Image (cartoon, rainbow over all chains, first blue to last red; front, side, top):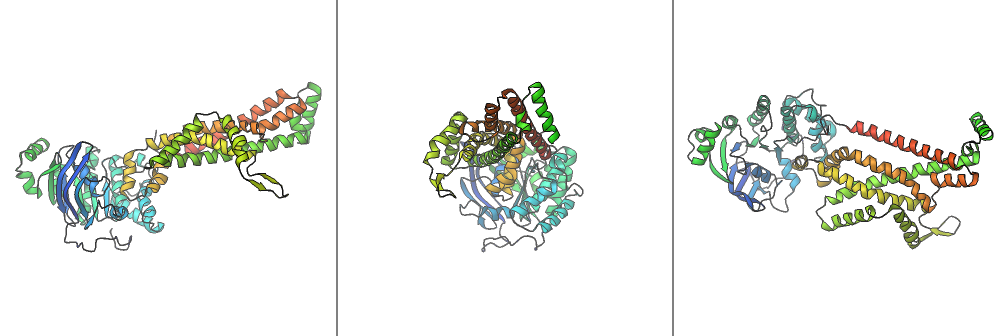
Length: 261
Length: 248
C-alpha cells in the first residue's frame, strides 16, 4: 500500500537514519493548568516496532500520543520524530503530520462527507495530489479495511467499528511512517472490537511503526513488541510482552494487571 | 393579458375596486420596477450579510484579541441601535462625507446613491446578527472533529472552510433563515431614504390614485409571496444539506 509513487518524499532530518529511534521521547513534562499529566516520560520507538502503552485512566497515555504529533504542546523535554524536534517553534507541522497518522477513540470522521470523501480530503487538500490517483488509493484503502461497497455511506450510516476502520484508512491515505492509535476500541461494542484489531494487526505485520494506547491487554500482549505501563504521569515499567505480563516487578503494575486480566 | 386588464378596468367602473396599478400600463410599470428593486435589494443584502457573518465568525476564532474586539464592537453597534437610525446615519451623516464623482454629463454627484447606502446599512445590520448565528454554529462543532482535521495537516483556514463551516451551517440554518426573512422584510425601510422599492412606489401610487386599501392588499400579498418563495428555497436547501446521522 505504501508504494513509493504516492505522495512526494517527506523531508526528514538529514542526520537521521532508520537504525535510530523513529520516535524518541525524552524527559517530557506536560501540565494542564496546575495538574501535571506527564512527569518526565522517556521512551524510544524503533522503525517497524509496535509499542503498546497501557495504564489506568488519567495516567497520561493519550496526552503522550497527542504530544508526539504536536496536537498538544509540551512544557519541558524533547520529542523527536525521525530526528526532528516536534516542539521546535520553527517546525513544519505539515511535514510532521504527513509522517504521523492518528486514530482517535471517537473516530472523529467528518460527518458531512461520505466514507470515501473522508479518506480523500486530506490527500487532495493538504498534499494537493491529483484526484484520480487519490480516488484509486482511497478505493484500495476501503478494500484493505474490508469496507468495499460502503464508499458512499455517510459516517452516520456506519457502525462504530466500520467508522473506526474508515478513520484508519483516512490516516493511511496520507502515507504516514508512524501510526498513533488512541484507545481506538474503547467506544466499540465487543463484537466490532475484533474487526478493528484485525485491521491494526495487518498494518503491524506490514511493518508499520505503531504506538498503541489500549485497554485490550490480550491484544497488547499479542501484537506489541514492547509494552509500557504508565501511572500518574510516569512510566512505571516496560518490557517485552511475555516478561511484562508474567513477571511484572512493580507493585503498581501487578495491581493494575490483576484488576484487568 | 389585455382582456384581464379590461376586466379589472370594468371591475373598477362597476364596483369601485381600484386596481389601477395593474390595468394601467404606467402604474403597472412603476410597481413592477419597484418590486424588482425590492428583490434586487433583498438578494444583494442577503448575500453580503451572509458573507459578513462567515468572515466575522471566522475572525472571532482568531487568536488576535484586537480582531475579536473589533468584531464584538461591530456586533454591539449594529445589534443595539435601531436599523432606521443606522440607515439615516449612513445616508445623511456618512453620505455627504464621501468624495463626489463626475458623472457622464460632467456633473459631480455623490459616490453612492440611496440604493447603495441601503445595501450597505441593511447588510451591516443583518450581518451583525449573522455573525452571532454562525458563531453559535461554529461553537457547536465538536472539538474532536477539528482535532482530527488538525492531525491530518489541514491549515486553520482549511479546517474552517471544509470542516467547521459546512457543519456549522447545517446547525444554524434555521436561525439564519429567520434572520434573512427579517432582512428581506426590512428592505421596506429603504423607503425612508427614497429608494424606489415596492413600498415607496406603492405609496406614490396610492397618493396619486387614492386606492390605499387595494394598494395595501397588493403590497402585503407581494411580500407574502416573495418571502414565501425564499422560505421554500431555504427549506429545500436545508433538506439538501441534510446528512444521514448528523444533527437528527
